[in-house]
Length: 189
Image (cartoon, rainbow, N blue to C red):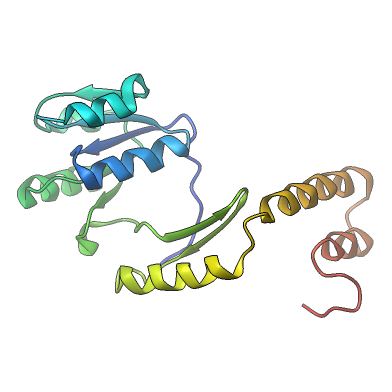
């Protein structure tokens, strides 16, 4: 199976995480970083987790039930109960909701990639669920190659790109100007 690699806009979208343990906490954090509106269902979230996220998360201290998927765009099942995870996945499928059951590839519409971030530049690596550790190793190698201060260059190129798009009509000249931002003339791509 070949996956279609995309970056998903979650800003303002309703996302549900079922399970607020260590793995759920990582997923909550990532969703919040993406601007999602996060609801967590967990019968006994730790005080530390609740305090860490505070009022940025809607908490339901109880077990999952099907109505929790009402109005949800994406759901992460991070419980230790295989039966509950299966139920969440099946209900999400019947409603057309993107679902990820942590560490159960066959119960996932998407996988979390291993990610390198340098500001707006994001490199994601996936083994399509075959070996997350391999994806992490490749991510680490890429991370070593990319300078930490790359963010400023990305920002500068983005500003210049917006200026070129504003000031130059579509066509070969504009394409060349955009290409020159990252490949100086005489350097082949």
